[in-house]
Length: 233
Image (cartoon, rainbow, N blue to C red; front, side, top):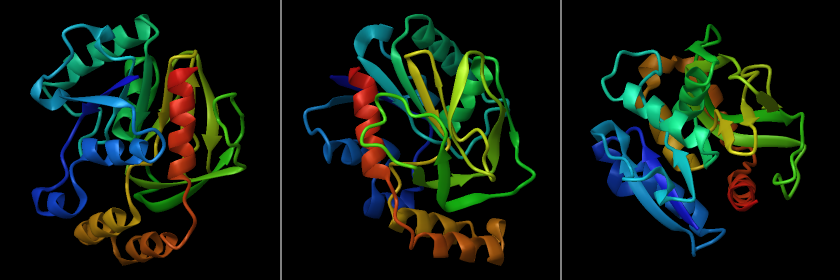
């Protein structure tokens, strides 16, 4: 299987030596499950796309510091590519920013949440179990880092995972798109580093709660297994 990684941002340069860049985080995650997955990186911020949408069997987005409602020159082309993937029913997974952009592109809506920052480990309730979600879980604990949220699901989306803080946490569209607000590719060390870097923006209360939440068990390996099941089904 060939997986296209749609890179929407880069890790701050001072942290890349310790943590790598975002595409490498995904490669490291999936290699723990299936080291035979072939990957190709496309930096969509720089206008890098496959010559043909079927160049890869499936695609996954990274997150981004940007918001989907910003006037950014590369976003229109990225939305066009998402529509092309969807029209051909090629598998696509949206992560954080990608989750929000897929929603906006396909009839949903994203806004900055009045609940503030979501950081650290989020605990989310699974409300619909799909066949590819094996092994099963009752709750899904995944690291998050976001202010924006999907406030209206895209057309034909079914909600799979929710929480009080982030109601539209994970959804599926048809058999081709799965989208999640969390970051299964983030390590706890990177999450802590990012929170401390943003300490002034987060405020002391949110920062400490986020750091404390890193003591919780997380399910990124299970989630990676889910995604590989989804890609291959």
